[in-house]
Length: 405
Ligand SMILES: NC(=O)c1ccc[n+]([C@@H]2O[C@H](COP(=O)([O-])OP(=O)(O)OC[C@H]3O[C@@H](n4cnc5c(N)ncnc54)[C@H](O)[C@@H]3O)[C@@H](O)[C@H]2O)c1
Image (cartoon, rainbow, N blue to C red):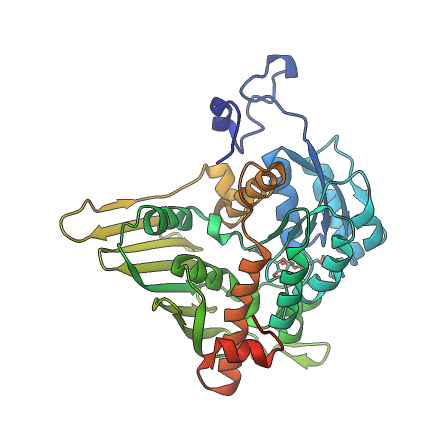
């Protein structure tokens, strides 16, 4: 996956500090290749810092500068950068325009709150630079469609930050279900996410649908992307129930009460007959994700688990039970400990690997704006289903939002 010319160097992926007593002359396996690409981070908050770390760790690129409207975010992130990467300079830009147009820089990583994405992206697109835009690409299906259209004529890479695809359990599940066809003809997909409440954010934007798009768009777009990926088809109907049972029921920010849900069930039907079901609970004292794929030749179950107690948690697990005596198996998909610890189970690191591979043209680009759009189509339809208390037909939903495909 690293596309190293010399595979033996791949053993060092994510472990750049090994052999830090060696001079450059004595390094072969751990040779620090001079980074070829420079990136600017727009929005230096929680995930902005993760992008800085995985960019520096991946090594083919470096972070040149940051831009953030909050002085505190900019200064804390700059301090973090200087502590972790001494000897590297970091430009702190005063305006978005300067950060986007700096000719030193090859790519822009946009990590600002959801409601700012479309306007920042428009500025970024003027530069022709490679762009990694955090998920969800927009807060509404209409804006997501506008971005998809802008992306179609864009000459450089425009990747959407739906990096859960690169978690070890999903990489292996894709290999089994889509490449090996281990479960045969896929019929049903279930995903469950049980986790702690949304974290604090700058301006608490994630507590309000008008800034985040709502929980189905903000958080669940990752899982709707996975459903779309496994189903290999387009959604036709979505039905959702849900509510705010525990979290933020008394939360107010600047006098405004939160309006986001914390639990839900969503059913999705695909054009090819695949049926999918999503179960969300955001008041669980853990992070737990589970995928179940059922086909006519087997069942695959994969899970990722992290709890905050001293109880053992089998972080990654995958089991495949097949019919007709075909070999079944259990396994523990994993990346190196250092890569997994770099954020989101290592998926952010591999998102960066794919981003640079796409820039270098060594692989076909994923995740595209089209894929990002379809994750929002399902999220937006789920939000509409919740509001209207009925099944949402996707074609009608798109037409109602001014989109005719
Ligand atoms: N891919 C993932 O798994 C993942 C995980 C977390 C967050 N995200 C996404 O990343 C984005 C940021 O989330 P976060 O958790 O880092 O939020 P955050 O609030 O921690 O950080 C956002 C930063 O953007 C800055 N900002 C706000 N408006 C800006 C503007 N117009 N220009 C420049 N900077 C601006 C804020 O001051 C803040 O420092 C969101 O879209 C979120 O959905 C993705």
